[in-house]
Length: 162
Image (cartoon, rainbow, N blue to C red):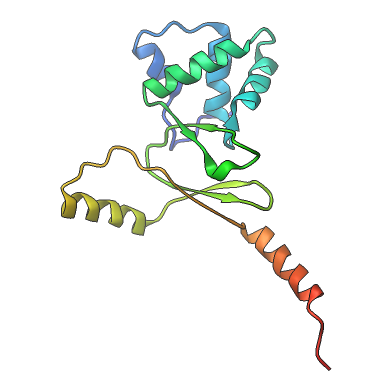
């Protein structure tokens, strides 16, 4: 069963074919990996997963396709607080802006949206007369699970007073 594209993501294959881009089997596999991803992937992960679909997929195709998708504004390249070194992660561009919350404990990346975020964008537009086309925001810290584990560890390490 093929996973359905997330409704908040653009249909990458449709976007490329409507622009007359030639779609090879390798490129189709890579696009499907990006489209179906339920997490943010780096180039090495994209290559590995695409090779699982089309064994002959090569590294050059991955990087050329990433550049093509970025040029058309169909994917976002994220630095994400240098998780695991200086990797860059990729995701299909969302229809709605969101924050990325990067956990320094487990490396999980969560997406967060809020009406307050939309209000700040509206305030910027109206007060500064600035037409926002792209926003990239990230916060680094501990997710609820890692923060809970850290708190539990601190409690164990703190001596009790008699």
